[in-house]
Length: 418
Image (tube, rainbow, N blue to C red; front, side, top):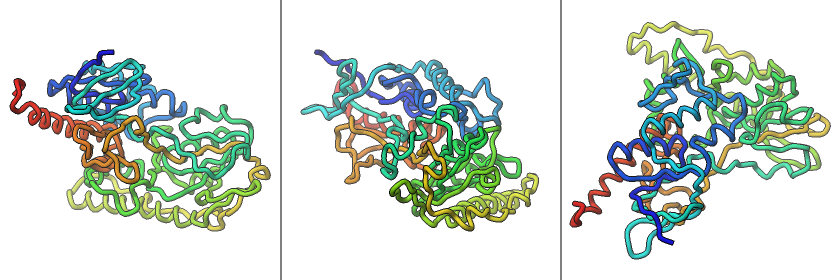
C-alpha cells in the first residue's frame, strides 16, 4: 500500500502537540498532528469531575488566546481547558487527525526520515515529534494485592465520591491530585487517610499575587536543572474552591488522618514509614523559603504589596504527625477503597529509534534527541521547570520548530530545494 508523505509528524494533540503545530505552521512547515482520541482527551476522560487547573487563567494558557469564559484570576474547569485547546487548534488551522493511533515509528532504511505506522495507514516523514506528554501510563506500586480491599484505582480513574463503595478511603500520594481528592472525599462525609511523601508546598497566593506570578518574577520557572532529588517531587497546590494554599494541618483538623509513605502490606495490615513529620517539615521549609524570597523581592524593588506576617506562622503539628500511625489494619479501619495518586510513567514503546538512554528515558537536550530528526515536547524539565505546564510547552515547541527549520536548511543544501 503506498504511503502518505509529510515533512513532520507530531504524535499527540494535547497542549504540546497543539503548540508544536502552531510554531510549525508559522514557519510554513508541512506537518500532521495525529491523535488517537480527541484533542486534549486526557483533560476530559482521565481526570476527576471537579478538577480545575492548578494555575489561574491569565497564566495557564498560550500567548495567542485568552480564556473567554473564565475570569483571568479564576481556575478553568477541566472541560473548559479541553475546549480551549480545541478552539486554539481551530484558530491556528492545526492539521489534526483524531482517531488515528500511531503504532510504530522506525528509521527509514537507506534514506532520510522515518516510517510512521498508524491505525489508518503509513506516513513517511522527515521529522517526528513525540508530544504525548508525561501522563501516559498510570503507576500503582505493587504493594497491596488485588482483593485486599474491594476497590483499588489510580487517581486517573477517580471521578467523584459516589463512584466508591461505602466506607473509609486511603489516598496514597500528597501531590496536587492526592490532596484535592482527599479533601473532596472528606467533604463528602468519608473517613479519609492520606499517605504523605516528600512534596513541595507553595502558597496559593501571597501578598496579593498568585504563586505562579512569584515563581515567574523570582526566576524559578526558568530553573534548567531540578534541585538535588527534586526531579520527581510532587507539588501540593490547588485551584479548587477558588484556589487555596494546601495546608496539611488544616486537612488534619478537618478529619483527614495523615500517614507516612506507604511501605509494605502483610496479612491485611498496611505499614507506613516513620517519615511523616520529616515530610511535613520539609514541605513547610520550602513554603517558608518562597515567602522569604518574595519578601526580599518586594523590598529590593520597592513594591507596594500588602504585608502578610500571618502567612509565616505555622500552627502546631496535629497528633497524627507527632504520634504517627505506623500500621493500619484495613478491615479494622473500614477501608474499602484505595486511591493511588502516585503519578505516571511515559510510554514511548511505539518509538523504535535510538533516542533513549540505558534506563529507557528520552535522551534529549531541550527536546532534541540523540536520534537526528526525533524530538520530544511536553515532558517535565525538558528545558526548564515550567516545561510540562501549558505555557512552558508552548515555548519549548518554538525552540524545536526553530531547530527543525535549521535542519531542513541543511538537508536542502545542494538540492533543487536550496
